[in-house]
Image (cartoon, one colour):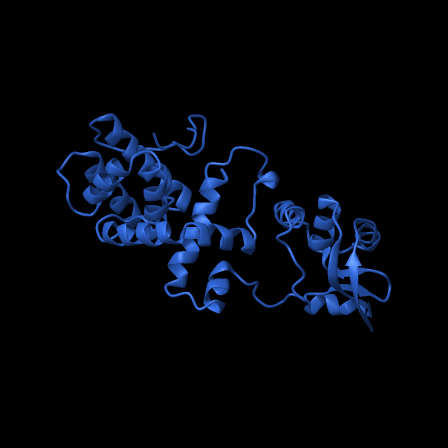
Length: 270
């Protein structure tokens, strides 16, 4: 086994990728995310090696090498391990990958789970991943650095939005992350209206208004395990109710046709 520290150039990365056979399927979004970090100078080696077998087979590092080629930038300080037995590939990366929640735990941040889920959803919202209609492979994917940068930039806003979401979540069966990100997105349109609408979600409402209908519909759907209640679905219903509130429309039901021949686009808040 040979261990060295090298400057990984696009040319060297391309050469090593020639041995990339029998590996897991490349995730193009992950390559794009790492390449973006490399291009803007945010990515740096963390000690995780590029592993090469005795046969020249690439055992580990295909996403990092592909990202270096895509970014067309060299990266210094990359650990390269060569002459490994090819069969060690079977035990590489069998442990759980680190999440942004783990990242906040390591940094000692309190209420890390809520902060992590809100930050992840906020990043997806700001980068147009929610309601994505383009090539699924081309979807943007956040790196831990992306999420940390977003979190530190909006930490106070996230904390305040989570406090609002906690109160509303006692009444409406929407996740706190959806309520928090929805509040931030709608506050960008009107802070006064957002505070009023979320107050209605939190108990200050009258029967028949948009907030009351949203609560009734979402609580009923949450009790029915046969229907979808993922974050995209929840945000769509939240924004539909918000739009009715902003436009002064009375509603009695909320629907969003996510698929099928009558498929609707994701409803953007107005």
